[in-house]
Image 1 (cartoon, each protein chain N blue to C red):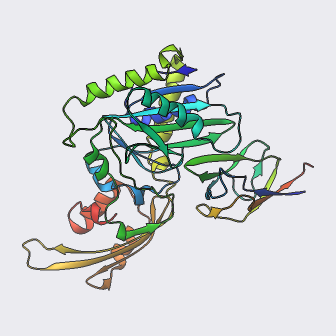
Image 2 (cartoon, each protein chain N blue to C red; image 1 turned 60 degrees about the vertical axis):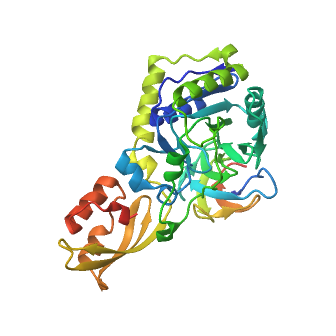
Image 3 (tube, rainbow over the protein chains, first blue to last red; image 1 turned 180 degrees about the vertical axis):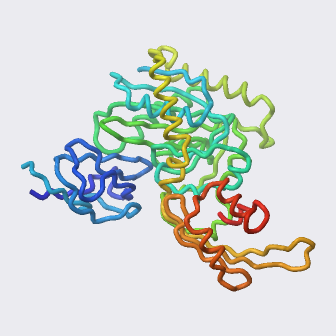
Length: 81
Length: 324
């Protein structure tokens, strides 16, 4: 089952975020609760964890790219429902 | 509330200490004040090659430190106090007021009419005296900030980047602001008792924050060894400090005078760098592409000793401020 990874809600509607770093490579297995990527907004570096275990199938933004809340940035192929 | 007394002013050790306490399982908040010897500390996802006068820092041996939180580049040194506030938040998203409101109240109680601006900064009149940043990881929040009490603002300002027209690239940008000290001097210069005034202010602020009543964290030998390892294996390494740097491009032309001043050579240097290394370089001497220079510069690690050795080999001097 494919699970979209979307950018969480930020501090304010005006807040801009940068996807600062991917902490996993495409093709790598990610455990639920494991750190997947970091975003920076309003001087906060926020480590985002995977909510399900699976394989990081694809990423759609590069490190350093601007992202918006709700934006799909990756997809995980998960065996979990 | 817990607190800690850091006796060290080693900027790498203090970053390691902060991260270690951040991940330490503690029921309750940890808040402590600490000081660094002179250093430039930049945000985790900034580009140090765009934000800092690296040739100057390297030449003078001033530590360049990459921290784990976001935000811009700050100057640490005598007369600046740092504070770190660690908590397990009961909220989602980002909250600065939770930390800044009590900090501002404490400073105000000491007679300084400061206020929060831009949600993140603390100002005294029109001067920014404190900036802050955060890191959120595994259900914990690290909030920290600087407090310019009686700092040498000339030294602070000169650490910023020079010749920015030479470089462009990715990375979180610093937001320039007019900075000032909490303890201002009418003539704009420090009055010779910086250490005393800073120590007095620090003690008074600790009392205002009721840290004298907080439970003191004592670190075991194992804790101290782990912090020392974190310093040695992470914060005080080229890999952490420069090895993740975002991509940037550099372009600069300069003239080399031959000994005796009879002739000169114009060098056109252009290169792309990523993760602290030159990826591609094109170097022209008097308009003619030099394969030897270009190829020898390609792949170099952007590090003082490496760049100096390259300069000495090809030009006979250590002119690295022309290469960055």
